[in-house]
Amino acid sequence: MDIDALRSFLAFVETGSFTRAAKQINRTQSAFSAQMRKLEDELSVSLFEKEGRNLVLSEAGLALRSHAEQLISLHNQALKQVKRYENKRPLRLGCPEDYNDNILPNVIRVLQKAEPTCSIQVFSEPSISLRQKLDEGKLDAAVVTRAPDREEGYWLANDKGVWIAHPDFKIDKTQPLPLALFQTDCKYHAAAIDGLTKQGRPYQLLACCNTASAQRSIVRSGMAIGAMGKISVTDDLEILGNMPPLPAVDIVLLTGIEPHPVLDKDCLDKLVELMPNSDSTNQ
Image 1: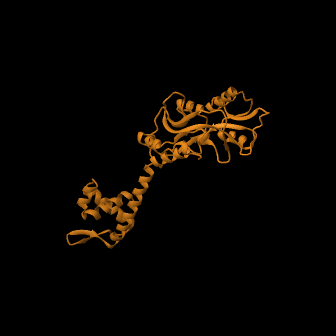
Image 2: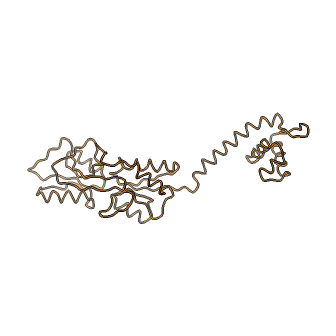
Image 3: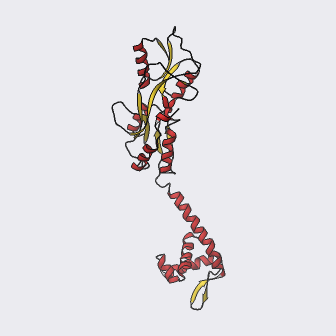
């Protein structure tokens, strides 16, 4: 059965007249009548019968009425659901791996609430790589560590550098301190090396890592200690005291050169509002 014919049929049910029904659906009465005859031919039944001077639904017409209402309702729901995907494009979101556990889920939650049908593609790379991809138009947004002395992006959280070790790790003061750090472009790397050098503490740079999981795995093995943001520390590691101070950083969301429709001002403001401060994280 043609869905348009069923809509026309229900127009008659609502108005009780071919003339009024035709007017309601913006058709001529002859076109409406032809459509109803075609529907009757398809079903091999008479949908209408005379009652005095008026035309009313036949027994078959009454039976069709309830089904037509259900079919039109389902059709409208299907159209509404599918139309939500019209002109949709995935949101390409970058996030450093060390923010995946505590920052990324909150960002995804806000974006999903803003647009439930939006497909989000996540790329976990260091901040420096994500900035480059944003500039090249390869990402729509990225969670990054804010550059020093800049007010860029939408503030999400503050993080403080800490020294980490396996709970059973014992510092041997007769040996250089083994270190597992992020790559040299990380603020914690530079601050850790600078702090140890100023204190005159010998060290051995065992490994430079570009992911938090790699650094944590080396520290977790007991082979070295590390320096990372407190927000990235897992419960199975210990935060060390009596070590050189490490800097605090701001974590922000940067948007790409071509704004993604999901990332409107309301969504970004909501994101900032709902992000928990890292001071309460990993307590």
